[in-house]
Length: 93
Image 1 (cartoon, rainbow, N blue to C red):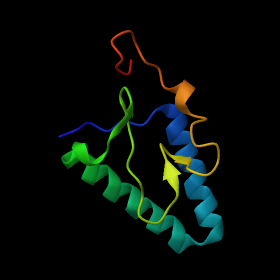
Image 2: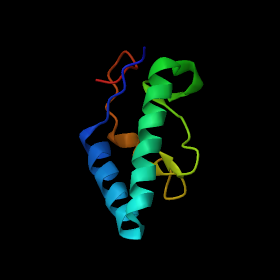
Image 3: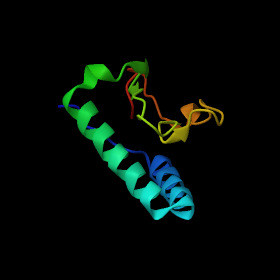
């Protein structure tokens, strides 16, 4: 089983995303959290479904929410990449 962890910045962005959806609709924010839970469970059990796009960083698309790494896919999709610390082994620190 793959261990899933969120960087502090990702957690902050996740909170912002949930708040944004909550402003749109309480129901949408709950659907988003359900989808996040589904994605974490699927990737934990089936890590090969989430291809590695950089050392230690895996990609798995939400069914209906356009996010990547808790970053919007259409809003500068790789802006978060330099935040992820990679050590000399190529693995996350």
